[in-house]
Image 1 (cartoon, one colour):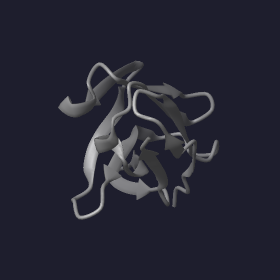
Image 2 (tube, helix red, strand yellow; image 1 turned 135 degrees about the vertical axis):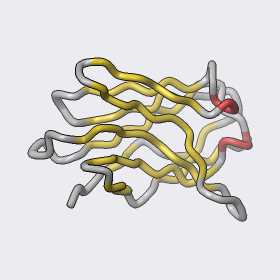
Image 3 (cartoon, helix red, strand yellow; image 1 turned 45 degrees about the vertical axis):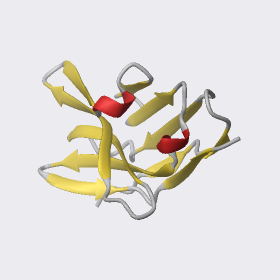
Image 4 (cartoon, rainbow, N blue to C red; image 1 turned 45 degrees about the horizontal axis):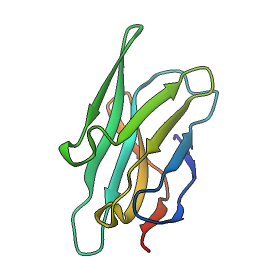
Length: 118
């Protein structure tokens, strides 16, 4: 079992920035990917960004809608993934869920609400 602890959501005006953090237990060493998904009201959960570790190399994937605005990063020593969100838009409003993949099993955080509104 992998318990993920998320933080950093909140209310921000359009054009503003937020940074989400998600930490996995330090005792877990074999997480192959970590990332963020989001779910807006009435919509399906979708990938926002994820970072995959292959050997010592990290590969980042982004949804087209956030490319150039969001940046994902991972601190392996802290087992933590970050999502820096800039130039936020009202359509970014959603519950953001942290995801970790370990031995082909998906684990999810409880979610953190991001609201972009003036």
